[in-house]
Amino acid sequence: MKRFNKSLLALALSSAVLITGCSDGDDGEDGAPGAPGTPGTPGESYTPVTETSEVTNLKFISNLIEDGSITIEFELTDDEDALINGLETASVYVAEKTEDGVQRHPDGSVGGVVSVGGDEATEGATLTMTDDGNYLLVAPLASVTADTEALIRLQVGGGDNIAASQYIIINKPDDIHTTATENCFACHVDYATTDARHAKYVAYDIDGEVDFVAGCMVCHNSVAGVKDEDNNKVGPGYASNSMQMLGHLNHQKFTSAFDVTNCSSCHTTPINNTDRGCVDCHGSDLAMVQSSDIDWRLAHSKIEDRLALMEQNAITAEITYTSAGETCNTVTAAETIDLEALYGDGSSDGVNGFLNLSTYLHTYDNVEMQFVNRALVDYKGSTYPKTVTFPSSNVMDICWPAPEPQALLSGDNYEVAGSVRLYLEDPLSDGKNVPLQANTHEVRNVMSDTSCTTCHNSHTPIEGIFQSWDGSDVDSVASKDHAHYGGVEEGGLGCIACHNSSMTRGVSAGFGPMIHDFHFGDKAAERAAYETAIGESPSAEKLNGANCVACHQDGIDLAAVPAFTMKTKAGVGKSPVSANCQACHSDGAAVSHMQSMGGFFDGENDNTIEAAESCAVCHSVGDDQGIDKYHLVEAAE
Image 1: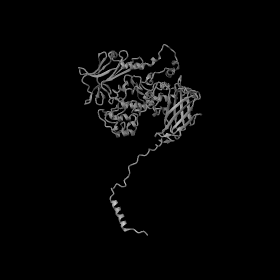
Image 2: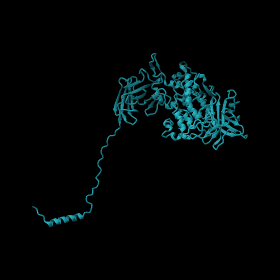
Image 3: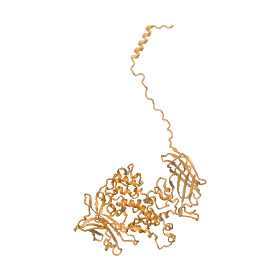
Image 4: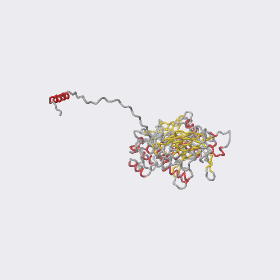
């Protein structure tokens, strides 16, 4: 048994107390942070993968043409950039560049079609997935060699799980066509969005841009195909209509003031003349005539001659006043032009006068830059007589007598302006007049300079314009002769003098609504019915009214539309934005919506009354409900 000395125990306890009391408070703190550890190895990146798609994007990687086969490598993704696995179907279409142009013989002796999967799979064709989303297509094709220049179109997918891709032009030889997508789309804009035949076959290049002509040429070769008595294709081309036949024959008489000899409307590069192109229009007998004494190109020179006449005879106009108080449109031509001799006695009969004159004074709004009315002419005709004199041979004064025109409206923004249209009477002996026009003031026009002449390419007046047809006998059609009106240069600037919102000739409220109606609206449908009845193709059936950019190449600004009532001959006024929209959107729901936003169609027939539409609040370009969400209003860059 241990015994403890009490004195020693007391000493130990007191020592412990003393040591504790001497602590400086730093005992037990954490040490300094350690050095950073070595970074870990990064994980591998991961791209999502799918085996189904509603949108299939094809990225071309490479192709190789060898003797007897074509090998194509590509990648597939969906609309969320996920790689697509499990592709089982693909088709490649090949047309070869030959001495006769692009050709694809139905029997496979020149070009051909190779398919993997589907109901018409080609023997020996293979489709291999080399990695997620990456594929190698080997297409056996007996006609090709390593030296073959081939136009190749590829499409994949289309089964139950993977949506069909667009048609992609993955290879195109140089100089296979002298036309361009831009020329076709100047009228058709975006063929793939229309309900026209073969719209689904529109093809794209490997950069995602439309390659319209090349896509067509895979089937519509330079060489036309024929069929035997059993309706089987027997070559030498694939489709019955060659590409040049489609261009030449389908545009012969499709609209007013169109001239098929204006080759520059479609051909962007110099044309290689061949007998095939001539046969399309002239038949084989005439086209094959051999003659070293005739330059057949002269038959296609009228367009250049008309344009030269317009440039050489360009005119200007200004408002002047005489000492007797007359108000005049003074027209000045180049010093080399004898206007006095051309005018003659003013008869414009081609014998005593070679110049037709159409001219007006207008009330002009210098803020909105538009004609308010034709000051001296009402719907019934001229109210004031005019006189024509020539201070010099190249200067013409067209004057109206004092007092100053009573019909000119008063207002802070109003002044007198003038418009002049001169028509050279048949100067090229082809039965066509050549229009010249000038305004004294700048006139607001949201059409681009080439909006009209892209289709109406003859550089002549519009001539006979369809007005109406009641659906009965075809002879009951009403038309209006515009041989001395209707020059459509500069976006129809010469038309506005008559077709402004004061002098409209029909129920359309001015120039804009009239153009919309005649190209896309009820009037276009009425004309189409008449054209069908007389055995012609409807002239506007392939136009898409949603493609505003075809005419409005500089865009559309609803807020900039002058907010004044547009007059109609029917005696009721229309609000300006709604009047334009109604031409296409004419059903009850659309009209009610416009009216709820301040639009009207039966207002007072006075174009000095302001309209208060709120269309621009919701439908301006860029807004959630902007017109650009439903219409193509800006050209692709």
